[in-house]
Image (cartoon, rainbow over all chains, first blue to last red; front, side, top):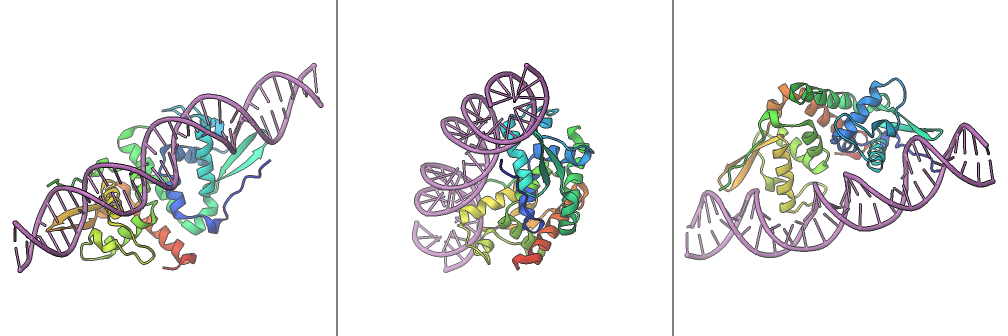
Length: 114
Length: 114
DNA sequence: ACTATAGTTCATAAAAACGGAACAAACGAA
DNA sequence: TTCGTTTGTTCCGTTTTTATGAACTATAGT
């Protein structure tokens, strides 16, 4: 099978990160992957609190996050175990990801509910 | 003529900001608008250091920045004077914009030149 | 009114995203 | 091995978004 490939840290771009995180579904995914102690799978997100996402679409969202360098996906049996790469990214991008997630959290707090 | 309209701060979204700043041309525009003491116009950016951008395209880039809430455009005679809204955004979004611009600056420093 | 300049809008083409259907990979059970 | 099941990817047609030249609008100066 095709080995999943992840960009090296030096190939990760701010542009790619911002594009990846300019989609609310991908933000939800990343937040949950960061929050959870156990690795999360693609299928864990097909039924979001506010919408249902087709699995082909979800697969694409994971690909975008992976290619942006935000998550790492490892095959474990029939599923993919996804974990955050935020710690790896921190030396290069500092507070970027934290600031983005904090801003989203603040936005929700101001009026859109949670 | 059509009065340019700008979103109220409470209508600005993180999603919109990230989308606007996931394009390198728009980042260059915002950085220069923030750096400059004098207001900048659309036409100031048609010949960027690394590429030429058609004015219809540039007009769209300004529209995206304006609708994202990142800049304010005021007509002065025949031209538009654009100024940053970052200070207005700060109470709502904190370090978000600063972190994004810092990350871009750091990325350039690492290898792509300036 | 005429000309020049700054931006916008329109029309169309190119690119990207969405999502259903078919496919592929890994596993367990017979 | 061969089924059957589960997970995720790929293919492909549709929809949406973006890019850009051409035409147009707005403002100012002469």
